[in-house]
Image 1: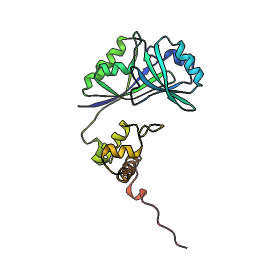
Image 2 (image 1 turned 120 degrees about the vertical axis):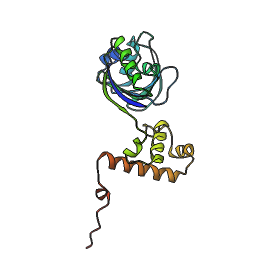
Image 3 (image 1 turned 90 degrees about the horizontal axis):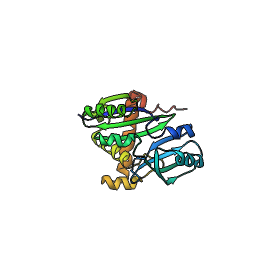
Image 4 (image 1 turned 90 degrees about the vertical axis):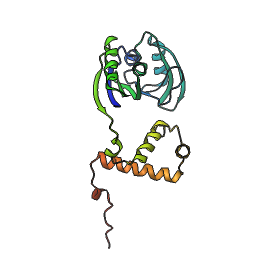
Length: 222
């Protein structure tokens, strides 16, 4: 059965320890689309000059290249040295999929999808064998009716997953609503309405709001 594991790792020994020592305010977030041979990582916090000085000095990073950026964060293609524990590559080698990965305050947080729970155990042991101490924050199985538990219809669930996979919720967006509607073979208006209903269902479910509470209050007459 497919499972999701949220795992914390100390950056010490897992690729970014020297960066955090040089620039403690650094935050890192994985790009959902693989940049090239390495990993696409958004870096932010300090100035770009400070970020690149730290990248230059980090022995764990063999190569890096600027891909994109804006005023306060920059996307780099980063390749770790072969002797460094690469947490993202480790997940792939243990037959997992990295759903999200971020690092701040000297700690990695990985959200990983695996087909079998044994792969989580194997991944845990791999990190321990490389003197990296992982913490399993959360581990749960994905039931077939996960979407209905969140108040979503099957189509709403599939649409949200497609939107995430294509980068619709990234900043900046990697796909427009028109491009996403073309991908799903539905109209722009149908996609907009489906997303709004999905947002409403998720918010209502997560905040435990009753249907009466979501209805607008009656208009008061003079």
